[in-house]
Amino acid sequence: MMALLLSLTLFLQGAALQNDNGTVSGVLKTSGGQPAVGVRVAAMAICRIVEEADGKPIPHGSVTILGRTRTTISIDQDGKFFIPHLLPGSYDLRVEVFEHFTRYETIVIDDQDIHVDLAIRSALATAEEILQTETQQ
Image (cartoon, rainbow, N blue to C red):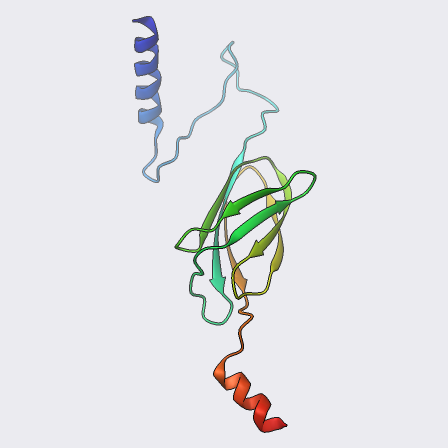
């Protein structure tokens, strides 16, 4: 019963702190009630892959975080991917999408979420490019 009451209390406190944009804000405190010092806050990278030519989202593909350990994340049908729980620092990414050139990008995280659009170029030649090449020969 005590665990249920504690869970309900924490839920209601969290709901009261929630902003309109779906985030929870507040001050981290120690068990003694003092503001926590030196706490490292994890942030999220909210990214979207778009066509270099027209800015339209590119669905499906993968993003790999490069480094000592590698993590691969799928790009969704809207061209978006999310990397949660990032500590402050820089992260090297490799973006791979079918029929597009591979893109390497470094993102820098501080204590805030970041929003990034990554433009990637198609590896397919357009009909216009093919005709221009043929007429130049």
